[in-house]
Image (cartoon, one colour):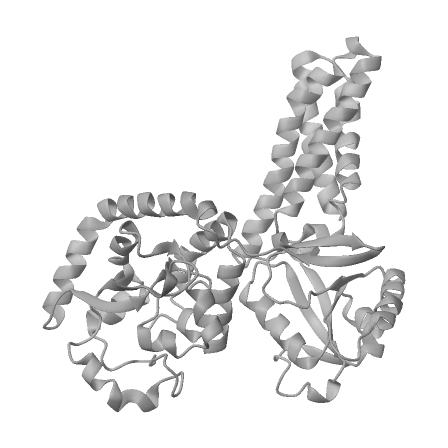
Length: 451
């Protein structure tokens, strides 16, 4: 944490020097840098787990700024002629901005996959093999989490083969956890609930990890639950985890729907020349209309006509039966083929860059779809899903982009696609929509699973 402390102190010193040159008061030059670092330390901004990618560290910086203002106000009360409050209010925005910039740069470096040095936290996972494998897979899909899994200690080590992903060391059982921490030099242990890991084991493990300078993180029983929906509630002296209900009512979503339609309408105006060019290319490449119309299931089970640029030959539906053996999803309702022979040359290009999706902006403008949501499915594919899954997916409007589209698209197994759609419905928030929209251009450029 020393590099972060040194850079924060340097930022405060530079801002204080500016105030000293302007106002000629030395008190802020001497007092602000240590006060700034101390206030960040009070807010626990230098603990290893606080340096993970996320919004919590930004909140800590803002709370630290408020704490410095309180200290300066107290000092001004006893020494009103010192100008300490004036200088602090002048210097503090510059200092906080520099500190936030430092953390923002680190976020960008992690998102871009650049080296971040030792600030990337390393962890060992403890728990059942299947749960550990699911957690590691989830963390790998989200490369911006700031966590690197160095190994696992399993309650069922005999099941590690074929379950634990490659390049992840199996250190043994629960009793080997502390030794695994020493060998891997990790910062944290993530404990997963399951047989063989009771409260006594966790209490003993927390004591042992404290002596090693590592922290213990407990994963919730429910996966894919947003942190904003979880809260610790003390009941009879016991810390119980409260799970808030998902936001599915229409009223909180009114701003989302208005924003969706305005952005989609603006996008249609800007992209109209490109869409006209694509329409001409589709018509020249193969016989048939430029637009493909297909029935899809929308919110509440109401069907609508989805619009896309045609990417297949006109006899694609008639050839579907003869290609059923190539379906990557087996005999289920979902149908997808790698290197589908029914796709035209222009269609393959449009699919790779997701340009065939542009006419769906019309569906967004008319209120049938949203910019972000579960993927709209045809009636037969929707009916192939379990009843409870289908009912939950249809609680919100389908989207032009979504969680599984920015997580690998068609390369994801069917169960992961369904799980991500349900996770979006249960954990929806404006912030989640913004994160998905921010990731969408990168997913389009990478082209992973676009076929």
